[in-house]
Length: 266
Ligand code: NAD
Image (cartoon, rainbow, N blue to C red; front, side, top):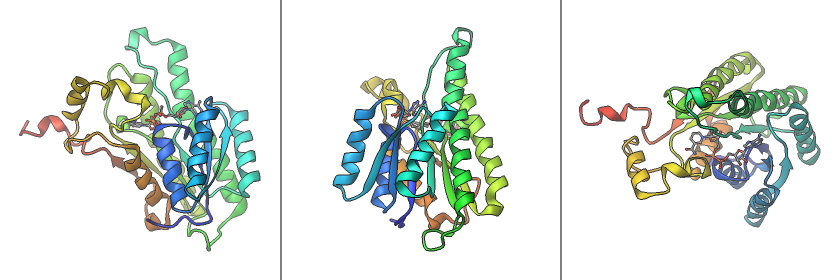
């Protein structure tokens, strides 16, 4: 595993699912980790306790990533605790699924607010701190790293989920535009696009044998992903091993984006 020794990493929405695995994997690679949560302080404290029990360093920090003042407070608390930030993982996200005609403006705004605006707000604060601090060559050859948690739905349209698909499509060009703008300052920005990963967000898709069977038809590799699949990819993207990777989306999806309908010749 590449080393992130001495680096400070903030993972939004890491009191459950993919975020927890990413926080644990970054900590196992030597990073000090901020476990952000919006509501579930108890769950976040369990993640922090697990990381500490494994010999790592972690703190829990509350913030709703869609709220500017809360994001700014979270970064102040994080930098007060760890001195600076080296790695941001923009992971927090949610779904509110409705057919178009039944979708309220509130459901649209909530999903765009957390999944897209939240990534902008957190990235902006992280980049301000990266630029203030500058390069620390003993820690990393980049001034800072941001990983945006996208989805296969940044490219696959998703009926009944147009707010979610629009938010992830937005993350794709937000990430690439930030990466283009900030590459000259040696700030690396990339995305991970998970396929179907077994977490609370998609319980309906794997909870029953029938649902799982239907899901596996969409996955050429014929297994559902686990959060650790994403944790390992995040360590690599945050490390200097991926130093020449900029503005890319790494699909970690068991082949879900390979047009599985054509598996048997189309
Ligand atoms: P999850 O529901 O376990 O995790 C989402 C986390 O975001 C939760 O901890 C939740 O509390 C947090 N969150 C929600 N609103 C927030 C807010 N306003 N402020 C701060 N935190 C907030 O689901 P997950 O599958 O672990 O999802 C993590 C990320 O991965 C999301 O961005 C999701 O879109 C993405 N993703 C998941 C899958 C999958 O199959 N599980 C696939 C593609 C993308």
